[in-house]
Amino acid sequence: MSLHDIAARALHALDPEDAHGMAIRGLKLGLGPRQGEPSDPILAISLAGLALPSCVGLAAGFDKDAEVPDAMLAAGFGFVECGTVTPLPQAGNPRPRLFRLTEDQAVINRMGFNNKGLEAFAAGLTRRKGRPGIVGANIGANKEATDRIADYVTGLSRLWGLSDYFTANISSPNTPGLRALQTRAALEELLGRLAETRIGLKASSGRDYPIFLKVAPDLEDGEVEAIVETVVASGLDGIIVSNTTIARPESLASAQAGETGGLSGAPLLEPSTVVLKRFHAATAGRVALIGAGGIADGAGAYAKIRAGARAVQLYSALVYGGPGLVVRIKKDLAARLRADGFAGVEDAIGTA
Image 1 (cartoon, rainbow, N blue to C red):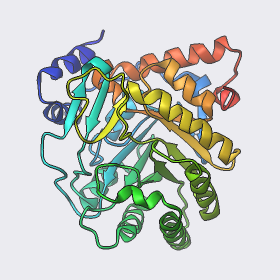
Image 2 (cartoon, rainbow, N blue to C red):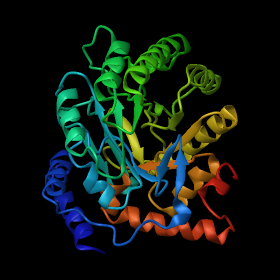
Image 3 (cartoon, rainbow, N blue to C red):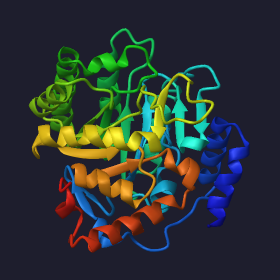
Image 4 (tube, rainbow, N blue to C red):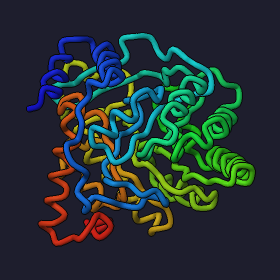
């Protein structure tokens, strides 16, 4: 175990949100881990035109204000997604709002899109402009917005040219009514307005960037297919499956299992992978899929790829595995690909 992993474990003595804040401050001071060697070439993949050195990325939620994307790239992530960012700064929900379910290797959060707003986020991305590495922006809507769809358009417009890709997050359970944007009529309006804005931004800047949609794992029969058809019709490039769940499996052993919010971590691996398989069947290769939810080792990452993901994302597992986890996951995943005779990630996609 590295010194960085020992330090991460020591942070468990603190309140989870205080520990996270301290971790961000440490990373800003340059105290984070550094990958000793480049990612194994077998892990490289093209994602919606983005050349990723590794298919293992950092999910949104860790770096809400785009403060430490380069530190996380240096730690070994193949790409980093910052946010969720909303147009205006907002405090989020009252504390406590972040809970470790240690017995379950899980986390419950009801943060409520706490962030410093678009201008602070844009400043963070501007500071790193010209540096290598793929960094995306996860955009959302303010809780009090009268036109939430307009908030997504504002985020896309403000960050165009600063981010390598965009993710429209309509699947957080912690902003009341947000998940209603996953219904077909609302989703058609949202994605239609984003597509229209994208056309204008592309024409004025001469640049285009991939746009992904992040969905919940708690979807009813028929909703997966409806989402896929709307995404394809609007010209979006991919779907991230999935965000946290409002479900509470009976297997949860932690005393905090009943806390309100989204559950992430180990208990989310199986149900989110089942939903990913449904999306893989429905997309039939028309858009890229990114697998998220419960990944804590190479086996979990491999399961997502074989279920249909071109790339994967993790966050909650860092709470328990420490910052050195990403390097261990990549080593394990590379070994699994080779053991099964695959020349690269591309060959393993959807083989489950």
